Amino acid sequence: MIIKMPENAKFILDTMHKAGFEAYIVGGCVRDALLGREPMDWDITTNALPEDTKKLFRRTIDTGIEHGTVTVMMGKEGYEVTTYRIDGKYEDSRHPSEVTFTKNLTEDMRRRDFTINAMAYNDEEGLIDRFGGVEDLEKKLIRCVGNAHERFSEDALRIMRAVRFSAQLDYEIEEETKEAIKELAPTLKKISAERIQVELIKLLESDHPEKFMDLYDLGITKVVLPEFDACMETEQNNPHHLYDVGTHIVKSLSYVKSDKVLRLAMLLHDIGKPLTKTNDDNNICHFHGHAQLGAKMAEDIFRRLKFDRDTMDRVCNLIKYHDDRFPAEPRSVRRAMNRVGVEDFTLLLDVKYADTMAQSSYYQKEKLQALKDIRVLYDKIKKENDCVTLKQLAVGGKDLICLGIAPGRQIGDILNAMLSDVIDEPAHNTKEYLLEPERLKNVFMKEHEQGEDHEKESSDN
Ligand code: ATP
Ligand code: MG
Image 1: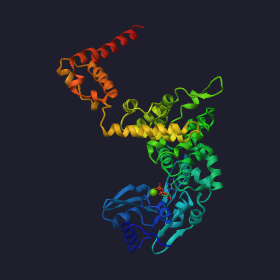
Image 2: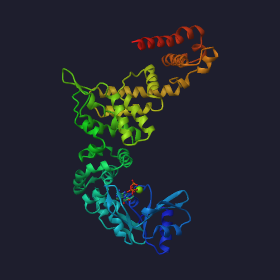
Image 3: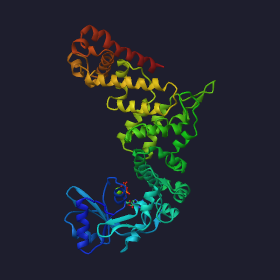
Image 4: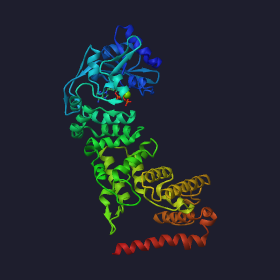
């Protein structure tokens, strides 16, 4: 068994061996190499203490000295070199209260989460597999090293990691490991939002996002995303739908490409449905306002899970507009591009496609054709650079001020009135047309005045 590792990793191992230390590549990189997947990073485990490692290499960074980790820099690449260690007692299912270094590789392997992650390798000794990692790779199983219940009690994040690896590799979770997850899922509430978020994203971006359903089946969403459990309990008796809301959501995940914003948008696009459900006289379900409410709920969820602002804003925008229906006509498409934002408009079409694919066959062909037609129109609008935003308007605030219009709110109102006109009729996007004195005074400035009148009326009431 030979694993081909990068020259730099080989150099680090050789240097350590020559200095009399044991050293192996370990964990995820061994697993991925055995599977023929490109490892993300090559971690190294050794009996050398951090200060020994630092003496051997010119450039090192103290990444986590107290946990025994030093990063060895080779050019721009960093390699984490960690001293064999035993994790001490865990407090709160979270952090080991202390780590102890050990001289024994097997001890270090024993503290790792899953058998497939607990293998080490170097060219001299070949593969070191003390817990049946290769066998589980062959059986396609995620299995804890040792007693599953103990392992999850030590660190509840491993619960999320189990499902995440099963989605990345398309593996089953072994029975005893699964039972322990079900029992200990509630302890996930002790894990920080940031760490949960990382695992959730990896699961969603994987090749098998449908494994998200395991998070529900194992009682994990109940703790980290209870809003989803409500979706599983919401039937949709409506000709457009085949599934309850939760199942529809999970089906829809597979119809968008692996992209953080798109997968999150699908996960949460119908999250507002349970709270907006009504039944009409024919017992057909409706969900009026679910997109608006969903965007609001998603914002709360993103804050709770400590997501970054940009991801939150983009996903919430897609959720808000996912159910907007507009005809495949240039004018309507330009309006929609203005409303949704040009940058993410094609993502909205991706969301609508996935949403439709996860629905029933009722009018499905027509819905898909309309989306295709809209995409063609979008491409044409982009190519011809039709004006759909204020930035593209032939007239700017300065032009109006030069004509003697006082700076202030009315400038914005006039420009928006012009934009609205130009979105309907792209040929109007010239200075000559828009600034023609009669038109400016009687059309665009009138709209501003009318807007003001409306405001007065409403504030009087
Ligand atoms: P990837 O980097 O592809 O997400 P990985 O298996 O390399 O997967 P890392 O988080 O980089 O995962 O961790 C490296 C190794 O450290 C793992 O393979 C595993 O042996 C061990 N490990 C990481 N996190 C834990 C944990 N929470 N409990 C026990 N062992 C862990
Ligand atoms: Mg890794």
